[in-house]
Structures are given as structure tokens and as C-alpha cells.
Length: 145
Length: 145
DNA sequence: TGTTAAATAAGAATAATTCCTATTCGCATG
DNA sequence: CATGCGAATAGGAATTATTCTTATTTAACA
Ligand SMILES: [Mn+2]
Ligand SMILES: [Mn+2]
Ligand SMILES: [Zn+2]
Ligand SMILES: [Zn+2]
Image 1 (cartoon, each protein chain N blue to C red):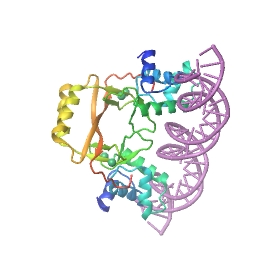
Image 2: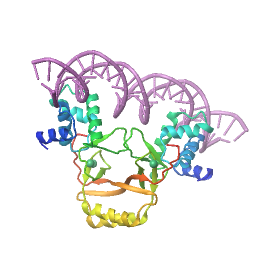
Image 3: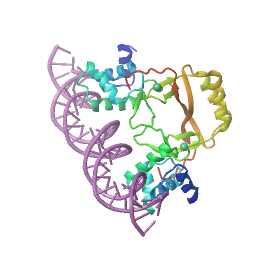
């Protein structure tokens, strides 16, 4: 995603294009591991020292409301953000805090047909996310959270 | 789960049997909706006013370490606890904060054989949890979080 | 270029959770 | 049953992720 793509993302949602928003969007694209607000701030601050943490939260909230990011559920006490808004699943590493995206159309079709056939009484399914927990072989995770 | 079952659970893990631990265990059994530390305290305090919130957290931590409870991942800023430690999935209601257990052996077999066949490169799967997001028809959730 | 509503910076406030420590208590031992 | 000890608890302080507040700045548009 290049600069004009990012400007397009913001404009398309009716958001003012500001350097702060572009920087946060760029961080979300650059950081591979579902970053926290804090790690986004740290990343952006290298080039843009004046960005305040409160502003990062404001921007992420707006992005969330507009569907530009999603939040990733963990059992730790902070939220992680995800620039990938198309439905996908996650690999959770047991041994570190790495969370990797997992796309699998075949799996999605399998699940869809399973629940279409079987259903859940009294419940309307809108979305299904798998948390695949385990560990990498020869794990060498990126440093950034 | 009755009182002697609960005493058995604690003893089996080498934990001292205290009234506080029994009360928290009882609350976990009684509260159907993956309660927070705070709602466990509120529930227990009705019969046991002296139980301190810090003690609830201590006890839940010990239970977690011993595998008596698990933590349920949400995108809100507090942790919810689960007395059901056997592998299962969750229905997340869109419209309220209800989280219901979902057991489905057929589904588990389906997933297991799928991943046995397909695998994930460089990753060892230990556990798979589905977050099934949607809404109940005619929803009338219990009051307790 | 000037106007204006929206966005930001900075710091205070909030709330879930953790930490600290004096006191209490379960339980093993005699 | 009494004693002693290490573990557990109560209560409050500390921490920390997140939210709130407000004065200042700025992007967008006429
Ligand atoms: Mn993701
Ligand atoms: Mn559960
Ligand atoms: Zn790892
Ligand atoms: Zn509901």
C-alpha cells in the first residue's frame, strides 16, 4: 500500500487526510504482528516524534468505526490492531506473542457448508474466526509487537 | 459440581482448601456467562462480604496456573474466566456481552482431519478455538456478566 | 486567503489488574 | 487437642492501558 493508496483509504471513508493518520496507517501496514497502540506510537515516533499516544488511540478508534482496522482478541490486557479487514484466521504462537494471519478459502468453504447443513439452534452466524494455537518450528519472530 | 467435588478439585491440584477458593469456584460454576473478576466478587459477596477483589484475582491466577480455569479472549478491556477447561468453542452475541459455550464433536473431527491432511507449514497445532460471532433469535440473556 | 469544524498534543482522569505487607488460617506434626 | 509454619487473605497502594478534557492547530472548502 503506497501513499496514494493510503490517501484513497482515508478519503473513501470521508476522513480528513492528516499526516498523523497517514503515519498510523503506514505503521499498521509496516508492522506485521498485529501491533498494540503503544508499538504503533513507537514505530511512528522514529520519523514523527510529536505524535501523541492519545492521538494514536483516537485515530485507531476512528479507523475501527470506519472498518479500516479490526481488533484482535487476546487474553492479555491490551488490544492489538489488524489492518487486514477481510475475513481471516489467526495462528497464535504459544512461545511468544506472535500472531500471524491465516487465509484459507478451502477451510472457509468447509466451515460454511458444515454450518449451513448443521446450523446452530436459535443463533444467526455472521462470522467465524479460528484461533489456531500452537508453536512454530524454528521460530524467529519479528521484534515488534 | 457439589461441595465435595469442589474440595476434590482443589486437593487434586495440591491447593489448600479455603472458604474463599471454594466460594470463587462455586461462583464460576453458578455464573453461566464467562464472568469477570468483578462479577465473581459481586456474586460471592452476597454470601461472603469480606472477600477482597485482590483475593479474587489471586485465586483466579492460581486456578489458571493449575488449569482449573481458562481465560476467554474478548476485544473489551477486561478478562473473562471459564470453568470449562475441556476444549470447546464460543458463540459471541453481537447484541450483548453474552458468550455461550459450543461443543461439537463432529466439528472437531472435521477440523482435525482437515488440518491433518492439509497442515500448516512450519507450525505445530495444539488447539483450535472457534469464535462464532452472530446474534441470537429472541435473545434474553442472563443478567450477570 | 479566510473561515470553520475537525483533529491533535499534552496531561489529567479512569478503571482493570497487580503489587505490597501485616494479619489470619489451613493443616501437618507431635 | 495444641503448636508452629508456610501459605493465603484483606486492604490499600501502585501500575498501566485506555479514555477524557481542553487549548491549540490544521485540513478542507468556499
Ligand atoms: Mn489478522
Ligand atoms: Mn467457555
Ligand atoms: Zn513464537
Ligand atoms: Zn445477545
